Length: 342
Ligand code: KG4
Ligand code: ZN
Image 1 (spheres, protein in one colour):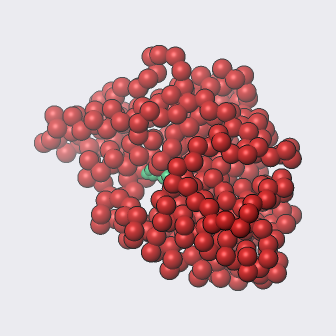
Image 2: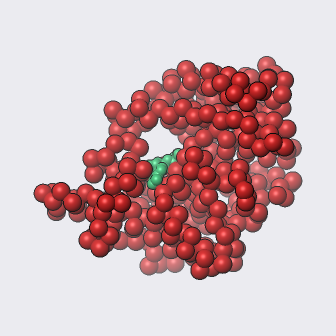
Image 3: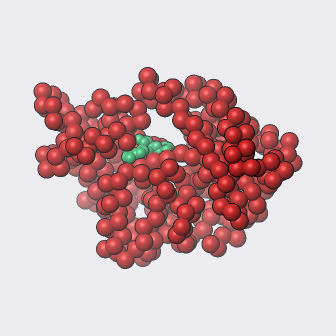
């Protein structure tokens, strides 16, 4: 089975073709970062308009590069939420219309299910069941995963998502957009012993997160050290350590609580190397294997959507001819697939 994947939930147009026998045949990504940089964040209307311009040419490009004709494609997967409504509707309308024209099925994919399954595009792929930490610009979730669509929520953020906290703190440190990778680079130059930031919600039981206080802590520390040229890097370092440590403490708890021996980490923040190093150590301590997507598939991409679509089409998912998009969409409400053994 060959599936075309379309991702347009935010500020990246991602297109890919996944083949059940040959694996990923091709993928391409167009980032709108340059378009939104001047505004310090994503401008939804500009995002939608840019997806309109980029989606079809990128589909043509990936089909040509992978030697795929329309008649070779057996299904289309498009991100239907959560995300920016206008941006989602572009991918949904194009995906559903192409599927109708080509007389093949289309499936509406949950963006975070895409992130969650991204490590399965590489070897070794994680077997079910596992604990997953999903850390992106919009979400911070700890879940157990028994199969496709079999998700149980363990923890969620009460306010900002981990990536959002990175982006907001980066902005107040005067860094560009998107701030996560820039803050991580600045943190490399920082002194880890200079400032200690709190580890929110770690001194009480439970697996929920809260990251908005860290940004305020960073702001106040910066105000106190306005005239110190080294302060920014030291603050970036202390902030990153606090986020990484907090995520790691909760992952350790989740492994202990569930007794599971596999941890999957995905979403944009899973590209962070300090987080990867720390979680490797937690995994080793608990004799648990830790899985990540390859770096290019940590952040938004079409490959994860094509793969999720393949798993759902293979599981027999069928949908009416509806152009379906949801700005908000709880992950745990997805339909479970019967046929989800690895
Ligand atoms: O998954 P993603 O591409 O989009 C969403 O679904 O939100 O995640 C983007 C988020 C942004 O907040 C970005 O700053 C963050 O991931 N990010 C990072 C790194 N790379 C991307 N945060 C920390 N360190 C990184 N290396
Ligand atoms: Zn994402």
